[in-house]
Amino acid sequence: MSTRDTRERLLDAAEELFAKRGFDAASMRDITSLADANLASVNYHFGSKEALLGEVIRRRAEGIVEDRERMLNLAVEAAGKHPPRARAVIEAFVYPMISTAREHPHFAALMSRVHYEGLFHAVGKVFERTFQNSMVAFVTQLSKALPGIPAEEMRMRLVFTVGAFALIVKQNPMVNTLAKRKTDVCMEEVAGYLVDFCAAGMEAPPNKKRKGGRQ
Amino acid sequence: MSTRDTRERLLDAAEELFAKRGFDAASMRDITSLADANLASVNYHFGSKEALLGEVIRRRAEGIVEDRERMLNLAVEAAGKHPPRARAVIEAFVYPMISTAREHPHFAALMSRVHYEGLFHAVGKVFERTFQNSMVAFVTQLSKALPGIPAEEMRMRLVFTVGAFALIVKQNPMVNTLAKRKTDVCMEEVAGYLVDFCAAGMEAPPNKKRKGGRQ
DNA sequence: GTGATAATCAAACGTTCGTATGAATACGTC
DNA sequence: GACGTATTCATACGAACGTTTGATTATCAC
Image 1 (cartoon, protein in one colour):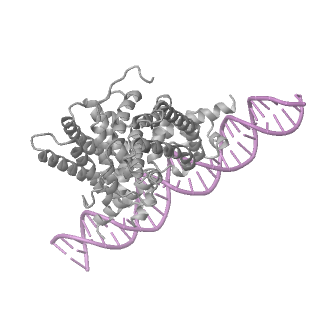
Image 2: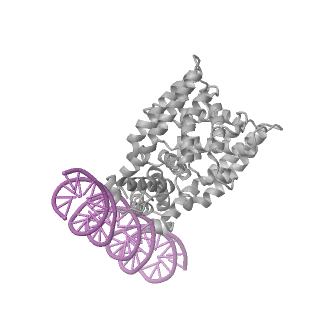
Image 3: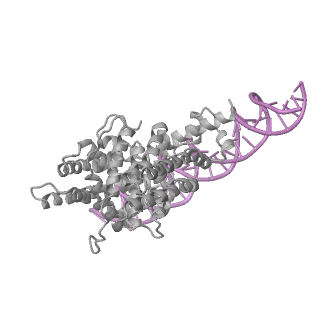
């Protein structure tokens, strides 16, 4: 059993348990046990538990960002000299993560956690270099598609999209309860709903800053 | 210093630290220290750490749900014999939590955590009895306002709204970074953006279940 | 085979955790 | 002021945590 095997088994086990239980609640003993590895192996291969989390995220995040950029470029080219429709931009933003959520549901759930837990101390750098940087290009294209929306409001709308998205891929019990589903909501199905919802939200008229409104 | 004082100081401290660090990372010693109380006081007043979390949520959740229902009823009455507009329903859903987020930002951030961490074992019951139950009435009114949307899709759209919402109230570093803000995003400001976005998303045409689409 | 490097292993380290205990103090009632 | 209850307190417990260590085993070039 080569080193590479152990490394990957550790990454897989960590991905699953970090996603299911959270960073703190997933102990090194749980992870190494699931990976059929020795307790000390994580510190040998990665140095620390935090570094393990960083590597779990890094090994997939870059691919997702690349897919997003590829889809965005395709949309730009397909639109010719016009800017692409907002819906096409949203699809380029959402589908790579949806595909990941199907192939690696634990990773998608973990990404959702990263948004909401204070895990930035461990993954801040890799997260910044990948996901956050990639968002700039999407805001740019959305602003071209919808020139009437102020840049700041457009950025907020993309944050809303991330939030709506993150709650879905989390496989949250609430989602199934609310949706009155006995089986888990299927990713492809929900992707269509999400794109419809967010594309319409993007195309909404800009906010009338009604000052003196509700205090 | 009466008992009630200590109880409330513990609840306040727990609310803040659970929100900032998460359930596991916020230790009893941190909480009791911030509350200027003895380490044993939590177990004396609440029985356990989990019970403390449950009480932290319960003491505010019920008020929020009541506010939501009150605003929803007002919207229904104001609309007369017609159903209220989707936007009015969204406002009734969002504003009570926005108000809470202004008065008790830690609580709002904690609620966001509850959606994403596996905290349901501790708060599942109180959470179910309050927030999830209250959603049924909103889906009902939204379906009346927008009869063209299938019930399941409407439920998903309300989940999207919760997700977009939760990411905002979390005071997530990403939000400020993305929004290119040096100061925290103001709740009232973002509430307007959020309602515009979600109301438009609600009113989007129903999804054309394009089967055989992307695999 | 031999030696150097890489990887695995069992065991232990010191720390921190949530909880429990029993004594000490504060409080309200008579 | 004394008594019973409610609360606070210092302290300790056992368990679980991430990490470290030093020996042991596998791997591979020569």
